[in-house]
Length: 259
View 1 (cartoon, rainbow, N blue to C red):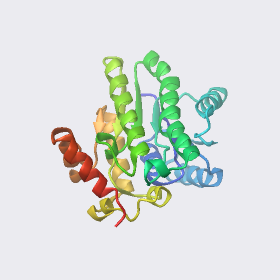
View 2: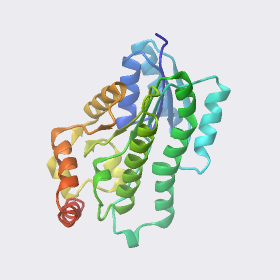
View 3: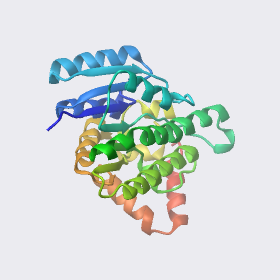
């Protein structure tokens, strides 16, 4: 069996870094993508030494409008043809929608939605041609309901979930699976950037990033369409689809309010 090559965005820290480790631990060569070249080089060195895999580094700010095309061109020039693509890069921002910084919201939508969509579109045709491939798009449990005070972030993750499920259905029988990882609160640097460290939701507890990545990677390799790590996260995702919408929105607002 040919060796896998996994491309991971947002690979410098958090879930992305742990997903890169999962890929390398399972014998895949890796392409590491994030803004911080220094962190990527350190990770590449570590993975190469620990798992004897090849690790390629491509520094990139994927919130730029043409970043996906530039990334694809860079891998093509280098002769790198990933058969596993993990779209993990993304960020959120807590606050009332009418007070949010418009430029920041624009960057969020470009990174969380547009770049992810483009990367999925650019790398999937070769996978279909080769009759095997895995794409893991990282969403969130925020994808399952509206999120007051986290409105745009929640909407971007709903987009990721909807897009991924639809494309996965289109590719049924092709050997290519488009999977969605929907983690809940997780111990990463995400919350300090998003400003969510003090919301009520954090009192329910945080999953370890390593556990989220391990469950997500294993589910992706099995071709599972939607992966929700953690029992409480799974239950909340189910309840959000069966309880009255008004109840879900009120609960979401409470959970995303600073204490």
